Image (cartoon, rainbow, N blue to C red):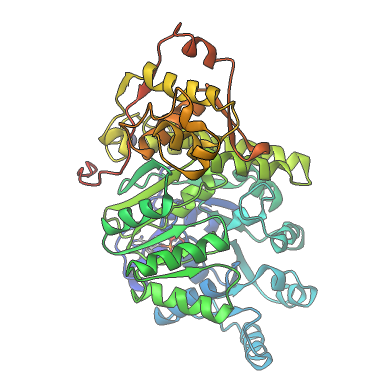
Length: 524
Ligand code: ADP
Ligand code: ZN
């Protein structure tokens, strides 16, 4: 995107320097500002921390009228407005936290052309009396932040955002700018359509975050893995879990280890949530254990790690969540605990949704996430490819690049596992199988006489975690199947036969049982 120097850009540059104190535009900002100044609709796709806000804040200061910013989060609105006020920019926000007196004053201020920007929640904006108020004013730009919320296929659809589609009809001559950190092609097209953007200028920044190292280990005794990982970190971190209960359980378990943490989920009272957020931002709490309810709009630059205790539902949400690490550009870690059983459960859960079309889209999105989890190639490449940003296959800063998987002749290991599944009549789940393989003297094993099986204790020489990993590989490779309709019992597939009959050899990857963070990142 060539940036032409124009009077508008020269002015924008002055505002950048004089008001915000920055010397240079970041990638995309100048282009976007130029287009908006020419009244074009724009779609801005930049990763979190990429500098989206200035794309509308600077035009707001240069254009004659009022800029409306639609923002879904009350806390974010307040932070932004406070920051603008300290820069000497006249801004205000309108949401449900205001008293009617405050509201009255702001309405009066709008009438008197006092403001350059007004932040407003979508449900308020679309109320008829508010629209009528705006129709009496000079509006120069409408910016829709977190614009992916308008997409019903997105991971964060919000009902109130749907009404924003009417804006174009109501204000046909006012440029609309959509901004988001979600950049897959489907969401992109959906935003354009839902917001009725007219031949928009689309800017897509690079989504690569070279300072974040992507890591993944097979989930096994996840709490212990989480604790071991946290103890290798210093600084703050976020741990994402899929349910409120897990948030509560894990935060208690971590606290018992003397880790300074707090749980966060939508079941907590608003005031408590706000306090936890504040304490985290002010470094009074090191680690937040949270559901996905946490993080959108949180501007904390020194988050050193994001740990996914459970598998996210899509690559978009995963990428957005890990993107909260390392915004200061310093090295940061992302760790995903991957478990085939989690995946099976999520798949099942998605399929029970009422809207069949939506289920199918969600299943596709989840399949991409699952494939990412199973992949044995550069993780950054997979992520960037997903966002249509093609990259070479060796990033030098993911676990695969730093410690490539090694293959070994796993025929004997596979035979041990598969024959044990057979002897157990394909009626047990993974942990029971491991207990038998390792020859544990457990009551339930002895009661069933499974200590008499010929496969009892044939895997004594290896750890639980080792066998767990081998079993997972056999599942991924299609030799075993998890029957989630039957308590995750393991079944043999047709593929298993030649292995059991010793007619086929099998290469497996040497299990990676813990994360070696000693390896130095090789990014610049
Ligand atoms: P986003 O909304 O894309 O997540 P922000 O607009 O909050 O990102 O910007 C992230 C940070 O980068 C902010 O602290 C902002 O002040 C800073 N920033 C934005 N543009 C520039 C620039 N041109 N030069 C230096 N810093 C910038
Ligand atoms: Zn890599």
